Amino acid sequence: MSLVALAGGVLLYAGRRPLYAWFDRHGDRLDARRLYNHLVDGLHDLAGAVTRGLDGGGLQRLVAVFVATALVLGLAGWLGTDSPLTGPRARLPADGVSLLAAVAMAVAAVAATVLHRRRFTALVLVGAVGLVVALAFVKFSAPDLALTQLSVEVVTIILLLLALYFLPQVSPAESALGRRGRDLALAGLAGLGVAALAWAVLTRPYTGIGDWLVAHSVPGGGGHNVVNVILVDFRGFDTLGEITVLALAGLAVYAMLERLDISGQGCDDGGRAWDSDMHPVIMASLTRLLLPLALLVSVFILLRGHNLPGGGFIAGLVTAVALIMQYLANGVAWTHARLPANMQPVIATGLAVATATGLASWAFGRPFLTSAFGHLDWPLVGEFELASAMAFDLGVYLVVVGATLLILINLGRLHDASHAAPPCADDKEAAWKP
Image (tube, rainbow, N blue to C red; front, top):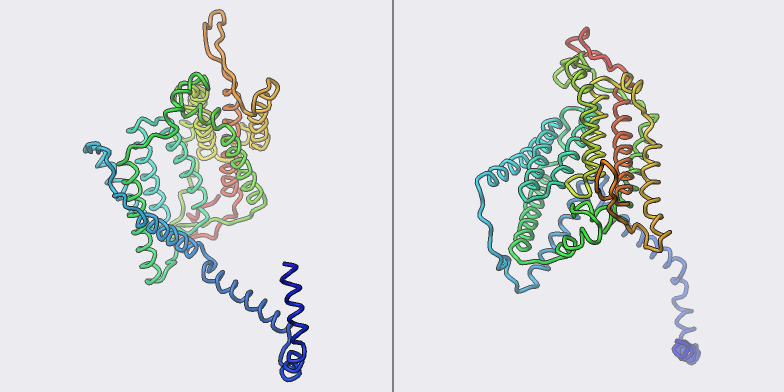
């Protein structure tokens, strides 16, 4: 580089006279600062044009660009290989029940898309899709995933129902005809691409890390439930990060809703007032009776999770559902008088327990989150297994309960503290009162 600079300087000096003459004739039209400013302004304009082309202020265009890019890259990868789409693995016969469930899920998914403007109807249809997915996990011997899917579906439906109260029952038309056609084409192509990818993978023999995990679940993690051993031992660091994100999400929702003042709707879109019986006696009585049983089931699921289907995440969701049902059935004021509403200490305790479990392994010269297990023989109780991963699972349980309840309780508070909406136009006396 130094030699190039030296040679360039020699050439400029040797040709200085014609350069000076050329500059005398054209120098008044040359301004490096002006050229530089034009270049910077052009780069800003180009960046603005690209940004406006990708982000028009809504999520729809961004998703369309993302899906289109994925389709192009996937198609390019498939066209660049000579491998056929269908692999040599033998296909399993399809039974009638599975086909019926698949058709029901497809119909529910299509109906949710077609009726997406009717928010409550779309929510019910999405729940039906989740239920069929849980049944698929049951069919393929994945009870942990089935329990998790069912629990998440219940919590999600409650969360969305609490939010729907503050939204119109029917969403406005969001797309022009041309955009709907574009979205339909992208969605259809994406569905075909995912189906082709699933077909190509499932029709080929594949051996991954699953066999190793099954073989080392008992000798390495001390548990027969491979899924739980993966979550609390083999990939415990991932789980610790996930519950940390869940805790932060719960605290973020709490921060957003703490001082929020929002009004609900006094009647539905048809002008009919809401039912004034917000807490039916039968529902309130049943939820109070079922609460101890639900908590007992959640503890049972937590304790047996290392060797049988269950674990801290599922148990936490069951506990959260049992407690949030008290808020729905009996009201915020009644439940607050009997149950603690401050969930931040529960979240902090869960994170502390999970982190302390990982730090304890350092005292024995082991890597972070290395679990230990052994068998104890107590009088009257007999022999049983004791694993340090149970403490980590307890931390997961506390974080899931705390974060889930923190979100749902604060959404419930909005219902209880929302202003009385204006009375309905056709029935002012029967207007719903919060």
